[in-house]
Figure 1 (spheres, rainbow over the protein chains, first blue to last red):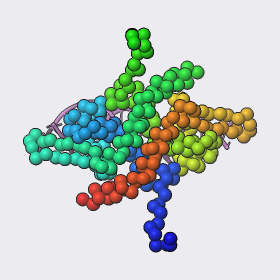
Figure 2: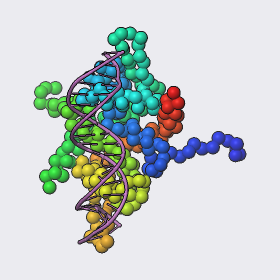
Figure 3: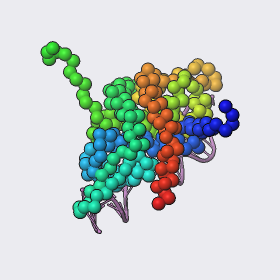
Figure 4: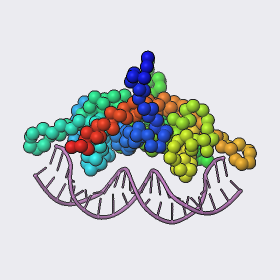
Length: 126
Length: 126
DNA sequence: CAGGATCCTTTTTGATACTG
DNA sequence: CAGTATCAAAAAGGATCCTG
C-alpha cells in the first residue's frame, strides 16, 4: 500500500462550526422537513394531498420547504402536462436513505412523548 | 383475553397538528439539541467544556437549550458546592434513549453531506 | 466558572389574497 | 390545482456587558 491509494474522505463533523455537514443536518431537522419526508415515505403525493397529510402547513411554507428539498436532491418534483396542473412529489434515492433515520426519530418522539410531557409537568410544578 | 387488559396507548402522530408528540419532535430537532446530545453521549461535561465541544454556540443559547433539555427530562444538571462553581451536565436515562436516533441522523448528515452539497451545486447551476 | 441581563438583528413562520 | 405575492408577526439567535 502506498500513497497512490485513494485518500480518506474528509472527516465531516457536525460539531465543528464550519463543517458543511452542519448545514445539512440543520436543514434535515428544520421544522417541516421531517414531517414531509415522513409523509412521502409511503409514496408520491400531489401538492394538495401532501398539504392535507402534513397538518397545519401553509401552502407558502410547503412550497418553500419542497423547493429546498428539491435543491438538496432529496425530493423529485414532476409536473404533468395537464390542465389543471398536476404536480407530484416523491423522495429521490438519496431522500429515501433519509427516511429511515427520520422514522427513527419520529418513532422516538411518539413513543416518548408522554415521558417528556410528564417531565415538563414535574419541572414546571417546582 | 378480555377488556381488563391494558388499553392501547393513545396513538401519537406527529403528522397531526395538535398532537403533543409534534412539540416533542420539534424540540428534539431544534438547532442545537442534536449537537448537545451528541456531545453528551460520551459522558458528562461541564458547561465550559460543552461549550467548546459544540462549536459556535454562545453561552446564552447553550444555557437556554440546556434548561429546556432539563425541563424535558433529557439532561441532568448537577451543581457542585465549590467556588468557583462547577456544573456538570449529563444525559438522563430518557436522554440516553434519544442519543441513538440522533447519532443515526448525525451520521446520515455526515455521510451524505457531499451528495447534498453537489446536488445544491447542480441545482444552483441551472 | 457559569451563567444572567439587555438589546438588537436575522430568520422563520403565518395570514391573506390573488393567478395561470 | 398548485402555487405566488405581499405583509405582518414572532421566534430564534447573537453581541456585549455584568456578577456571585
